[in-house]
Length: 274
Image (tube, rainbow, N blue to C red; front, side, top):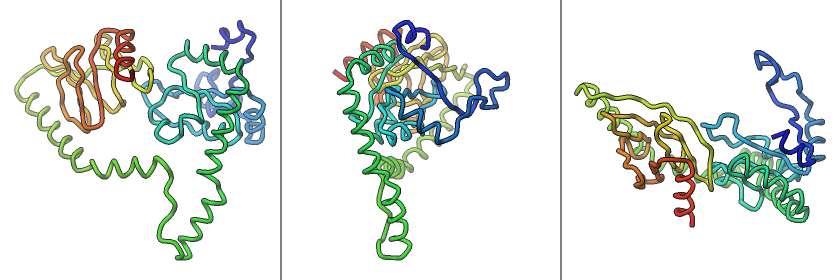
């Protein structure tokens, strides 16, 4: 990334962090900066980047909220979890490294558009997570003049969704354990397959399973097993499901598609989202 941007005359720096990539143990943060320097660095930047720590684990990175609070434009990986909490007009998203480079150049050339997104992000975080309102609500509830705390957007919906589906998930997990136990006792060949994330595209995840299968899915809470040479997905919401090449497997809240390549996966996603 640094070399590609430098070739275009763009200065790219990685500042701060909890670990030092140059260290053999990676335990010491030799390039750590204090919070005052951190805020000043964000304020000086035209674009702040965010990406996943691990490619196969979705996270909502805390630094994104720091960028928004400073009013600095944030370009982040296309993370469906993040879209649940933050309005689309507050951030810009990229799908892969090539798209990230393209968008950096484009947003640097479009100062008005970049500043509009940055202002929207700062306004949203001030309206939603203002510390004065937060502590005022805590005191009001503590003093008994209000029944409950104000609800944060996204969090309550996610929790309610979990509560609504908890019994179903528990039953399905029990059913999956029983299915797998029966399969093991029957002597059938069962292998749990390794999974590598290939990235995300338009909010969908693209996975490589055992270097043989390409999978498109809504979320990453999935295991893949092979039973007598046939591919199955194991999810909390749908249990054990056989996958058929180029057919969409639907769950209550997810879609899984088995394909042959990343390019074919992107074509399928374009059809779904088109």
